[in-house]
Length: 116
Length: 116
Length: 116
Length: 116
Image (tube, rainbow over all chains, first blue to last red; front, side, top):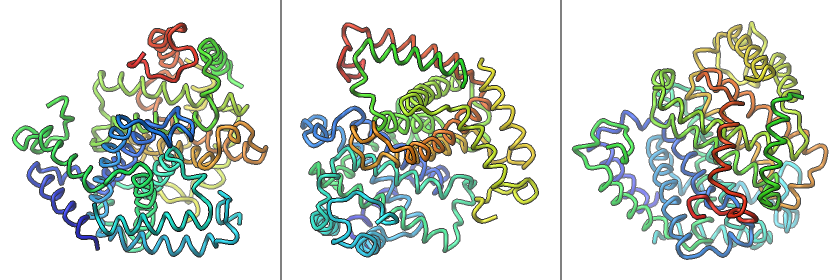
């Protein structure tokens, strides 16, 4: 478990509790909020080419940064309410992906593992 | 900056580099992937009531946990490619939310700050 | 094929062509835009209970209506660019759903067909 | 109001009623479902370049067509439950867009109207 993430979760629990927001923060609502905020990230890239998206201005980068924070805040709250250890779950997923996408068969290809 | 997140980003950079996937990982593609994975989280809650979403079975919780990992992996990769410090951006966002949603005016209400 | 939808597609083709927007309207960009607009619909329901969502004020209903139009406009443009007949594809899908969800086994249950 | 869309809505009302699914089809659940299906459309374009997305194989086009139908089915159900006329709302939106994006100022530019 990451201490930084736990500290964030602790702060968010307090923030919600002071405002009596626990009633709104069902996992289902948090999941909807996660999707909404992820779409706001995507909106910044809506009409950009891949190349343009690699060269954001500092102003744009700052705007995206705020949206990434929103995604992260809902993600850690949802993980907290489901008692999921994000770092452990992610490390497990990377290992699984390593098995699904062996280096020699997936190099340079954006092919789903089911089609490899 | 969180050491756990940095370690994850380092691992993911290596994972992508071994497979020559940098070409696919434009910020724009990562943002689309983030949205797609967030929707897969939401799918687990699609027909649940708020109450049911608070009482997931262990099996369901494990399934959601894997999807949360997918969201997290794209989030940290996108943050990495835009050089965004997720912990710092999130702490700044919590402070901003504290100003937008003063305890006395937002207690028990799911009202957007623009309508408070 | 629906004449109303075709008329809409014709109008949108002209709209884009006058503005030389064809270059931006790749199926991929239209698909991203569809997702972004769908999330804006969802945002209106973010903190509502099921019950509250069934009793929107007229003002709220008008706001949602505009977002539904945005979703529809991207949907018909995407269908147009992929030469998909939305009405035919939807009728086929309803028939398929009828087979996947037989009345006797799916009554009153929000169970995915794979688990029926 | 479009007769084709009304016919679809009528069919879907019957489909849900036979299965006693009205209880699940709150506007809020339909909005979540719309977002989930829109993300499934986007998933087909996840790693494609703009150019590749303009040249889908017939097989891929058929797969996307099914997902577009899913989006459309939730969209017309949501519109039905909120008593929104999709064609009228969309025509109004096109007119509004015409005012926001005058031909001479928006030609060849993917600039949001607030920045024109």
